[in-house]
Structures are given as C-alpha cells and as structure tokens.
Amino acid sequence: MGTVVQASLDETGQLTLLYEDGRMDLKNLSEQRHRDLMITVIEDVMPKFKLLTSAQKRKVEGRIKFLSAITKEMQKIAKALLPTSSESQK
Image (cartoon, rainbow, N blue to C red):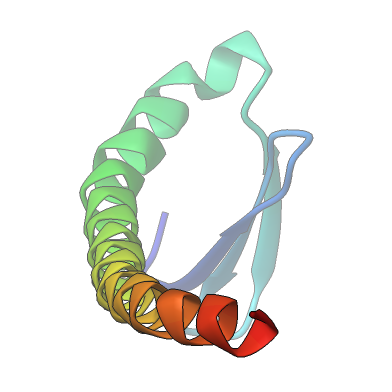
C-alpha cells in the first residue's frame, strides 16, 4: 500500500488515507473487501482511544474532587451563618 502519514475516519465508515508520496485514497470500511483493513484500523485506534478517554476521566474526576471540596466548605459556611441570621431576625 505504501507509507500512510495520515488517516481520517468519518462517521459513515469512509477512511481517507494520505500517503507519504502525497496521493490520497478513500476506502469504505463497510464493504466486505475492506474488512481486514477495518480490523487493522480498529487495532490501531482502540489503544489511542482508551488513552484519550482515561485522560478525560482523570480530568473530570479531578474537577469533581475540587467541586466537592468547595461544596463542603460552602456547607460549613452556611451552617456557621445560619444561627447568626436567625438571631438578627429576633
């Protein structure tokens, strides 16, 4: 096939390949004759996808942890201010 320098896959299953020599090729991965290529693409993409989703998960978990700490502090402040506002209404 040649050395592929870039590959793009769209939502319809069209794989666009850009080769080192500048030529482009379009493959429809839903066609039976491209099943081996589809397996190769999946084997290449899945580990990268796992890394991306793991990194995103860590970011979200970090944000949740940060927001949880803020929520706890706000609850403490609210409890501390609650008796003061009750006393001022008397």
